[in-house]
Length: 170
Image 1 (tube, rainbow, N blue to C red):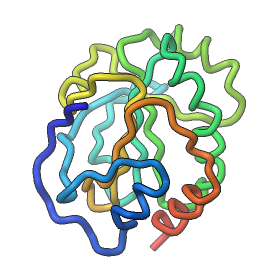
Image 2: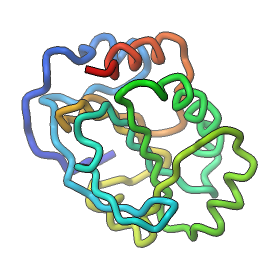
Image 3: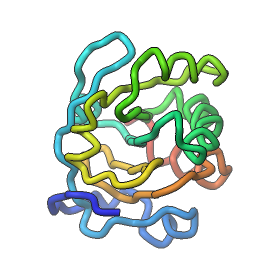
Image 4: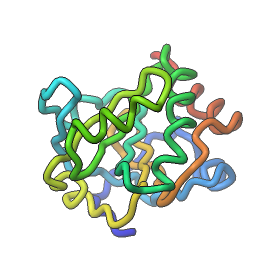
């Protein structure tokens, strides 16, 4: 995976690289920043990544035709439920598919699952996404802490506990 990032020092209050690795995540050195990508919510409003700064963010790029993407969505729904009373923002961005196709697909997914759209693929290209799914964990100060390429179990008890602590309301 190639992610286009710029350098920035990470906050010392976030999980360390050893803990992230032990949970199956791939730490990103030097707390890099992502470009301020734009994407669209389910109501058609254009948003920017910076609209979510101040929260712990799980940024996920996916597509309905991708089997690992489909497999990880139920665990993302559960994670979202478990962290709903914290400063946590889940941003699953569907890339290059119509809202009608995605909405039809999501009818099978139970729970309140936010969906965002990158209709033209520009946001994914700007970050350097080369495979689906790709997930990026971002700190409150907008620094990237870790990334995962491929399907992931987001509902793991240890991971949920770490994210709860990291995303506590301040």
